Length: 503
Ligand code: BG6
Image (cartoon, rainbow, N blue to C red; front, side):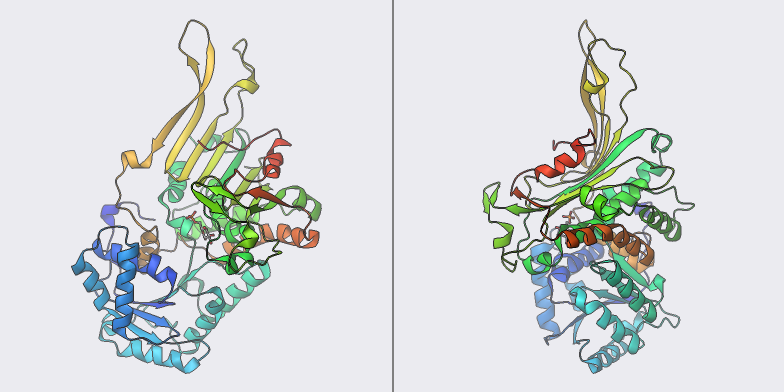
């Protein structure tokens, strides 16, 4: 995490190798981020990009397609000179982990490239491939000695999903750690590239006033909401095999949860911060089958209207099985077994094809113990929520009670709202620039460590198991464009609570 934008230094020279260079992730996020870094003079002095894919093409064909991608997905107007300089350093290599000699050729290509030599041997391998290629690609990188750090650094960047359950996540970590050291692995969760998410740490630990009340004595419960308007679009095949729980909870929602719930780290460095985050996830209570079913909600969307669009039933989406039981919405009640959070529920919910887009963490403080104002019961006082808004607007908002002007004491809930955009100007970005920059300077504070990944899967595994054993029992539905299934409201109502309304 960068403390001061002025203090940003240029990364050491390196070659940036992208596996899956023809894919969506490369065009939509990786290249536009490299472009933005180039525009801010934050790429290394000596830098080259080697694009790798299974289907052959020439360097020029690749450059053309990347240029088209930049024109389509850049977050700022393209400056032709900057784009030209970036694309000039791109070359293409055809390689497929199923064809081991192709990786020998990749190594030879890297060794022979003048610019790759000038980089002193530093290499960053970015896996922008489907997950099935992660381990086979890493194996080939290992076999050909490309991950060996002989005086130069070698790093592997890997995108989620890191496994599909606890066992597969452990297997993937074990496989990677046979080939390289933990410090060489940069597991990206794009939520950690979001400014407001990074700011949770600053809000908590750079201010003296929140930490004393950040515990079970003052906090009633925490709500983490990631609502999306989009359905599953063209990702039906991937999504149907994955579902909302696997797609969002052990990664994105748990990143938010761990930043909110972690203990203060001893130091602001990757080791301390990641240890505290893993620790809090390890402390999530593992429910019995009955409790897992009672404390979870899963639902699938039916047709409806979102804005001007008619959305079909999830089951009628391209590449989704007609009788699919995959959830497109999940809500969970989780408890953390430690001194700070004992007895404080964390309610998490996320879903697709809802009526609005909203990502937020809402911390609900306990009500005043009694009301001294006649005619206003404690129950009728507005709730004290501190809300960290991540999307659609980046905000921090405090709700409290105030006196309505006039001769009598009447009370109403009001809000104080800080909007990032009002204070700070930042060029529009993809959200990946900081992450890619951090990989190049070797700062892995914003990346996930193996133990954090496994702790996340460990916490969701009881729900996966309970759902599997329950079969189709308990799968609810909701209308596309709505606020989600009624049973999600029930999850809180039975505890005498309710979700924060969208405002
Ligand atoms: C991805 C999921 O990791 O995150 C998608 O696979 C989801 O299904 C996306 O839409 C949400 O990201 P954001 O940044 O829009 O909240």
